[in-house]
Length: 390
Ligand code: ATP
Ligand code: MG
Image (cartoon, rainbow, N blue to C red; front, side, top):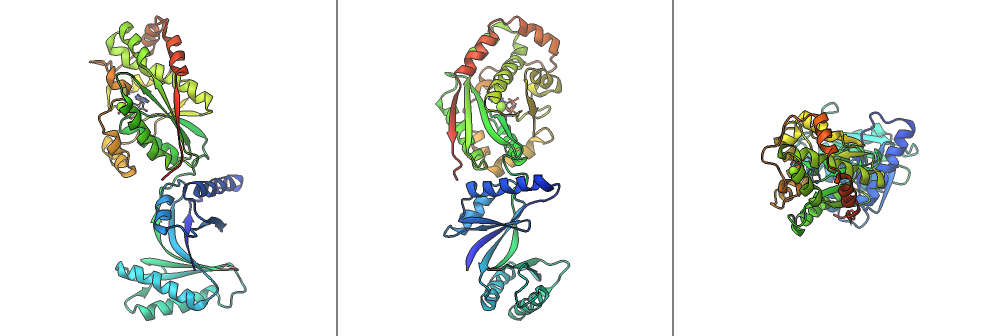
């Protein structure tokens, strides 16, 4: 007998080549993130063999693999009808202890030489369960729990219960994107949603040394560590100093526009880095209307500076929902630490809420040192590489 996990993924919209690619990527990601003994693909399911690993740890790590809808805990047993009975009763007992009442046995017999048909097995093992737990009832249409039996040529899988996982698509199937990661609550959550749609991430953070200290770097690395758990190849994090650009803008631009101009510089530098690392899009934690820099007019003025597609996964969420998600994925506590990123340090007293792109372009065209400063900032980028570690 061996512990296994039976992993299910959503097949909706997956056809032909797409499906093969999806499954291959999912299996590869399970191997890298969960690090089980082995995985096998069987009829639209993936069997994760855990070998000597601790099942609780494996179960925990499966939650970090996007593309998995849900999974069951199960066992692989030999073609041994007595052992099968023991396991079926053990699984049923767990559900009875949880107060469940109606069940169903669902057998699939891929190995046609097996002496019992799937209907025989359903009946016979259903009867064993009823005998052991007289308060249970069979309900094939609306069971509280299901015990799955999958008879294969060399073994039988027995499993039950469905643990919901994170859903989405396997990281990597949608290509790579660069997340603009501030120290705030929103951008790590935006990164989580981007990864959930199959994007592999790298991050970019702008800091304002010496106004920001090593603590700000540590804080961002801490956030990165949480995101890296979902990334089979780990996370590459870029940090760029923005201080010279911010100072220059502050000295030469009306205070109310300084944020927009800073953000436009960020977009240009982000685009340069993204092209270098072959990222196809920028991701931000922007969310309509939360703060002055996030009116639709200002977002448009900022976006115009980017040469890449910008995705804003949080645009449809309320702050309460974003905060809830941040708590769920574990980034909230780090995000609320008081170490500032660059923007807070140079925030204007009263930022413009409705910028006009022509006016912005006109102001920007007078900043003749800006592109040199941006290039210098780009050149002084540093990167950190985090492994996928739990
Ligand atoms: P967050 O909670 O993510 O900091 P916010 O509500 O503070 O967002 P803004 O300050 O307008 O909103 O930032 C909007 C987005 O711009 C951020 O979500 C992030 O993607 C990007 N951003 C802002 N500041 C930085 C920074 N210093 N480095 C990298 N990206 C940044
Ligand atoms: Mg912020």
